[in-house]
Length: 309
Image 1: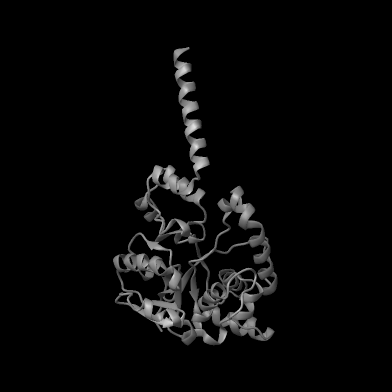
Image 2 (image 1 turned 60 degrees about the horizontal axis):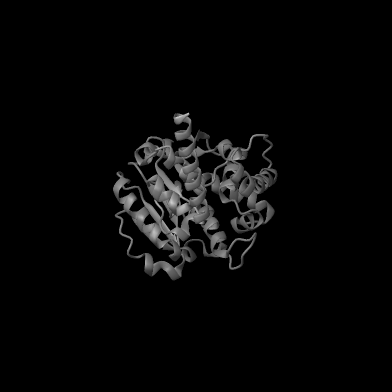
């Protein structure tokens, strides 16, 4: 069992994203940490072209087939639920003591190695945050925060974590196989549950892990902020670009960056870097562009009149 590696759960629709991620891993995985790429059996042939010295391609049916579902729930497809299940159940394989879950849309932006994920020995860092900057954002609060908080509070109640402070993460956590073993044996099994039941009850795999970690204290908690910068919507992405924050700036604080495909997929493979005009033209409608033009013209005309007066 190796101390740390990367786990990537992907599928055919994300293949182009995965090829971009592959390129960044090849450039920045300086220690050749092992990479486990898990895809549906039907997609294995497509992903066989992925060429990394440390990659192992596996069919999800061969890895955790007993847990996979075939029906949707909570408005989520079976495929989406299965990727959550795979992340939780991968710890049972005994292949990695700890694994960093990486989204297909991610792009690494600087060199990384074991010490980015492990504090000492095989003790992983744990990404646990309150996400206050998202709580104050009106759009995110309206579209995601309220329902997400309610669901995560339910998870806290399930595991018996009594804490007014809710600390979890959206993704890109470093999972400890020891914590997951405890979650399975000490929480799921006494209820007659498996990882499948947990995800079907509340589909937040990272919060199931995070809340059990905080409840059980199976391993020491070495708390850190997120390792990956995620743009959850176009407003957040535009804000970075308008502020002139580039990839080098992001790399000072993060290992990788994600432009969430939930909102950007229809625009193609959108990168984190970009110029103001190009990015704005992608995200804004014609009506919004026209409003910007009118506002700019009005502001310019007012300034000229002011100078003349």
